[in-house]
Image (tube, rainbow, N blue to C red; front, side):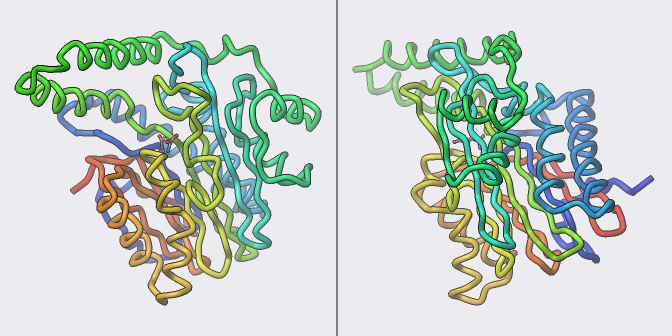
Length: 337
Ligand code: ASP
């Protein structure tokens, strides 16, 4: 049984082969019950082991990323697949992307509602089409043809997520109701922001893997943001913003307020900082998140390079995250320092 370290150590002594995240946000120990903490830890561990088993049996980094993400997509704990949040219209619209660091092939889907595991559809787009991104019903029709599992949208129904949507919608109404009274607006605005971000807790999932051939792959899957409308799409399916992989630098998967990750092209920025400024993976990842903070965007990222160096910076209170090393040593972290 591998040792599970609940420390904040970003510096393992040996090569990391798989790193995952389950979203960043207002994740505070004081709001977490021991049962909830245990459930998240167990699911993150299961995802790490699923990916690790793939890598150990000689599968590619793409297959390892897919296996790890599938576990989190099938869990209601995360905002991806089964746990996807609701749109303003009480539907679920999911986004996912994958990139292969060996040849920079990539695939993505946006705004899909009937694909059980959106990351599988992203892989199919990469492997079985000449495109990089497909959206909506077209993506679903393609996925069906490609043999990806489809489900009735009712599969994604969730009372918890519906309550979350109602809370966010009520608060939006409340803030408008106070419009015009500066004093009131200021205090309720602050409260609103805290609760709003809390409810929009960025539960996206992602993984970056390094296989036995030295190839990197990165993937991200999400339900996006609660109460989104107008077919809003975030950073997660956008190659370069939410996901990027290149064996020459590293693989990256992001989570957080997507609009800011798109504007700073965060996943690619980590690679660019490594290439142009000769920064290490950890330095580049930290600088990319500092730029997010400067722009006003909250979130975090995971990065892994071909030497097995890992980085997991975030500017939120916490980020569900973990990695597994070559020998099977597991680290899982939830909170900040
Ligand atoms: N980045 C995602 C989005 O904006 C949300 C998340 O990371 O949870 O759609």
